Image (cartoon, rainbow, N blue to C red; front, side, top):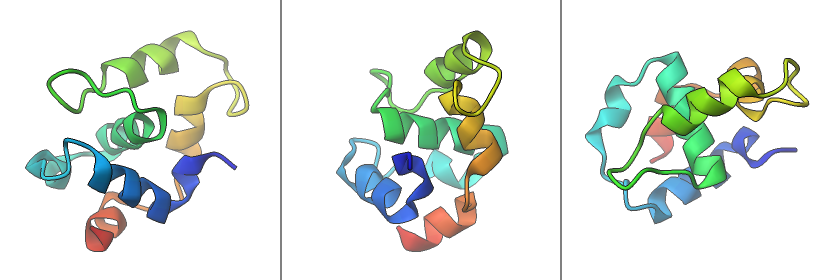
Amino acid sequence: MREFKNINKMVDYYKKSTNQNNMELNGLDLISFSAFIYSLDTGKFSLTGFSEKSFLTYFMTSGKTDEENWAMDIVNNLPYSRDDFIDLI
């Protein structure tokens, strides 16, 4: 199982990140939240914090199935919402 499916693990990663007080989290849509989870799961944050760039690059250039494409797997199989995540933090 990929770590992103474990909401508690993702919350832990978030609390240990330099972006732990980023208020943008409240305004993320589904794709942006998926990109955020991808960043937490891979550790791919930009120098300025959260960015969709690595997520979108991976999404557009990788395989066509969930097994081959990590970003697509997150979009299709994320078992919790942004609000669930915010409630835990």
